[in-house]
Length: 130
Image (tube, rainbow, N blue to C red; front, side, top):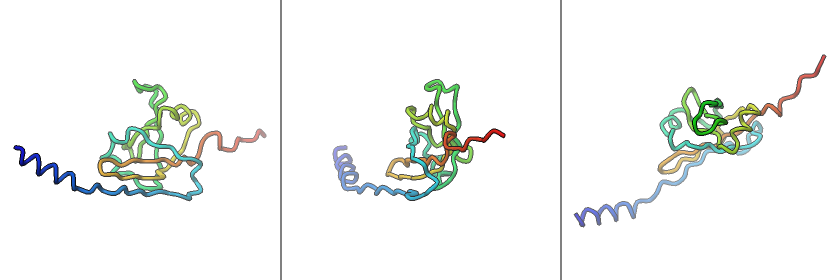
């Protein structure tokens, strides 16, 4: 038993971790600001299937969310990939954010996503009265 433990120790100790792969839209003029995605560790299968740099996302308010009445879910092609952080969720909902995937950070265990916010309600031109 001790020999097996020693072998496993040396195998994992000497194993090199995978480098971080980062894809990013650095100078995309559509992006007003960036927003991290929270909870993406729970949606890795969906992220692997649908997350593509520059792809539009749907921001879906969840008024009945038991943990946060301001929760905003992030969907791509009908699959959830995470949530807007709690600190920014109310603003995202009230200002009707529109977003794209601005960065994908793949690590050895999980892939993280960063959104690029491309439009908000307060940035839209107001209609002029006739």
